[in-house]
Image (cartoon, helix red, strand yellow):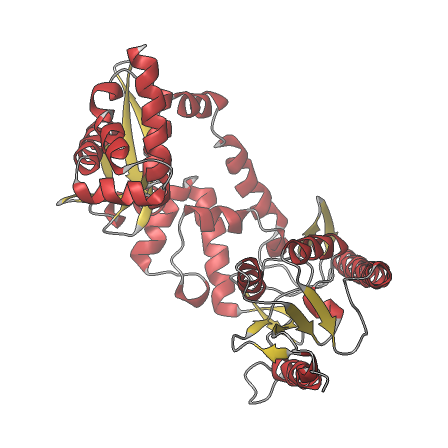
Amino acid sequence: MTKQPVALKIRCAVYARKSTEEGLDMEFNSLDAQRESCEAYIASQRSEGWSLVPDRYDDGGFSGGNMERPALKRLLKDIDTGKVNVVVVYKIDRLTRSLMDFSKLVEAFDKRNVTFASVTQAFNTTTSMGRLTLNILLSFAQFEREISAERIRDKFAASKKKGMWMGGHPPLGYIVQERKLVIHPTEAETVRTIFSRFVEIGSATQLTKELAESGSTGKNGRQMDKGYIYRMLNNRLYIGEIAYQGEVYPGEHQGIIDRELWEAAHTILTTNTRQPRSASTRVQTPAPLRGIIRCRHCDRAMKPSFARKAGRLYRYYTCQSADKNGADACILKTVAAGEIEAVVIQQVRTMLRTPEVIVNTWRADDGVSERDVAEALRRLDPIWEELFPVEQQRLVQLLIGRVDVAKDGVQVHLRAEGLGLLAHELTDIGKEVTA
């Protein structure tokens, strides 16, 4: 009696993708249809040992032009850990529309001896002919995608040159009716007031404060800060024009302000442009907490700021709310840079000596022992004062994820991913200092 060969179990994963989110809220959508076809295909191969894995890999609302898709990343991770043997798709372009990305996927599949199958196209990536056919098809798919993108760009440019509104959020003063910009009378009056008042006082800071005191807001009740005001003052839509790629074209819509008022406002804007010396001073002045310090009262970032008194430079960190909307907008306003930096560094030194941080650092990098981590972190205290300011700033940025500042204190949040690297950094620095 002849024994039947035993079919090995082949774990199959279904990947489905849809470029837009349209229709995904339906009870049975495109992703469900793709998956149903793929499941039927896997069932037809049951005699070959094919079986469906329970996990779903669905990307709804994601383009096939790149690999930044959560379900695809999860699928690749499961492939790397050996959970999947075959990837089944309804159509090859559901997996990718990019020839370069396809080559990366094939490389990742080959690394784990994984193949993939298409329900509507007979492909097998284990054969050279199958690879050639797939490359040809993907080349045409990518060509079609690029041609389509070029057509869209050409149409967009042609429409802009005709002065047409091409969508997006309409600016303050306009609403959209039948795909055209139409003046909103109440909002338009606010726009005219902003331009006129700016020409009168010549200060966006003072104008922002006046608008806040009067209760004036932008679209959807949004508070108008200095950035908002500057964007308005530079928006050529308000004089009936359309700007596109450095060129200006007459718009189909009606302007809200006249050209004389526009020119007057821009004369002041040009005059108020800051001198390069100020920017140069900012670049050269250290600010170790730049990008990580925040005002806890406003939940806004704090930016480095400077002041000169009697020829001496004073450094501060200023809340963005106070900087954009006036000092009254924030109860914290500013903090002295030197003082807050000293407090933060002292907190970090104390935290690095705690058992919890030592254990977390050891877990973040299993290439060193817990004892080595503890010794490396304790080395920070005697080493810190020997470091140049630029090296101190680099270590601060490596260690700290966020610094929350409030009237009642400072809270430092360490970066978990930076702890393991820090142990190696401190070990190397310690060797240099003691050499």
